[in-house]
Length: 300
Image (tube, rainbow, N blue to C red; front, top):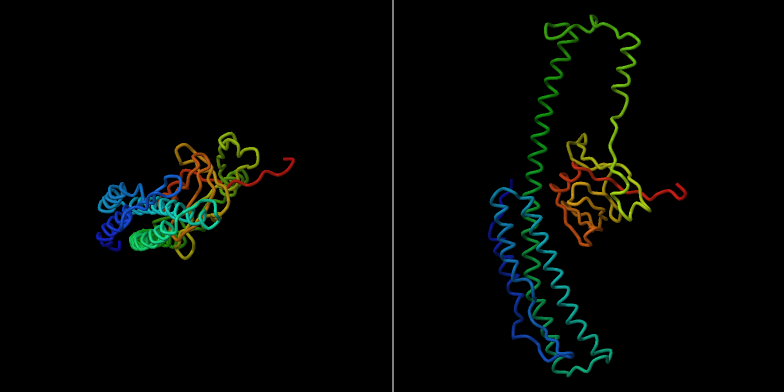
């Protein structure tokens, strides 16, 4: 696994804490008694980043990455609200909806510029840390795949030896020519055993709640390994599609918002919020059961 400089965690904390206060002080006495201060809510990020760092130190890199991504999303949300407030004041003044003295408008504009100077380093610190953690996760995944490949190669070698021994009639197994042919009944049983697909259980439509009116269960997602030894999801995830995730507590319907390099952003229809699933958690949930939801046929 690639090493991650622990100073990257400290950089995030330092950069984010600076946004809690507006250089030069808050802009007060704005219309409606409003004031423009530092970003509220970022004070708790220090403890959250510390928890993510602890996860990393314990070797739980996937968990650490997921935590940092969640913190980044929270920070971006707070920054978005701050910018919306400042932009709203300026827009109202331009449109004549509110009378704002020219001096106050300049103070708001200066506050915007100062906050941009603070948020830019914070955004970069998040990106640096997330990139480093993503590389560490990818490195671990590559190591796991290499281990799986080596294991399968050993198994294949064993199978090859066994097959050769059987074909040559050596003591490790009977010769092919000496095998007893199957009678009609045995052949029928063997055909059913190898040709029939195992029955895949599908949850009851009732678990879909309101989605049961318009959707039905499609194929179940699986993690497969290609000939090039790369893991892939089949059928592939698609942005904008709905999926039923059985492994979440409670089971829920999600919509894929964004597919990233090593994570998937989904909207949880039950709880009404967004959740970021890293590759490790996604594979775990697929193992517990994820189904693509397809629109019901009209008149079905």
